[in-house]
Image (cartoon, rainbow, N blue to C red):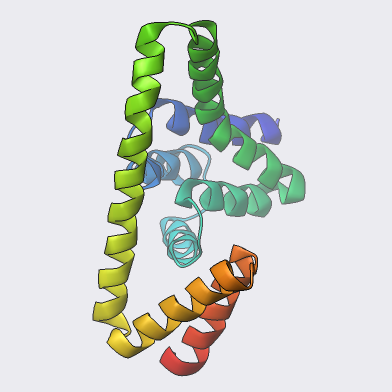
Length: 176
């Protein structure tokens, strides 16, 4: 029964919540602290603080931690699954709809407009990271890390995960 409660505690906030992880955190807190009493408000706040300090979406980290605390590895798997299922179902439905109408001129036009929008969003994200780096680490470190990353990726074809790990090590040594 605990697995079913874990599933509901994370599925319901993710199905009715809109706006991503930060918008559904209060809904998750209402389930975890208020409804089921698996954590105190302080424990939930500490879990949220830990989750915010790690990379990846906050809702899945919260689900994994709470699920593990409540029911071990199985609980973590159930809670994370319940967190991603609503998005997964929506994506499968949208992809099925697009695939069914893939020969439609409207769908083809829509696809043509999506690529430049995504390119502009990625450019904006890159610019945002660059300006944050300049403001936080300074121009010398930002340019040095950027050039090293570009050379590693383009010239030596190093996997991006290793480039990111190298940048983290550099930041830990020289900026920490």
